[in-house]
Image 1 (cartoon, rainbow, N blue to C red):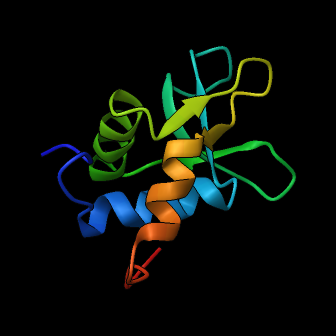
Image 2: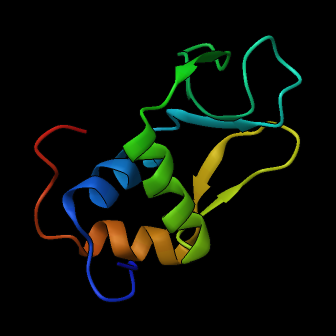
Length: 95
C-alpha cells in the first residue's frame, strides 16, 4: 500500500510522531545501529523504533511525505506530508 491511495492507522500514527519532532535517522555514527530512532526531548537519540514504524517511515519517505534533514538527522514532514496529515479526518488511537 502507498500513501497515495489511503492513509492507514500505522502511517497516520507515524506522521503524527514526525510532526512532533519525535523521530531521528542516522547512519550509524552513534553507539547504536543505523536506522530510525526516537528523539529525546533534548534532541539526543533514544531507542530504535519498532519494525512496523520503520517500515511506515520508509513508505512515507518513498511517497515524499517525510524527508530527512541533513545536519540534524531529524525526520520532518514535507508540504505534501503536512497536507496529508491535516487532511486526515481521525487522529490515530495511539500516536
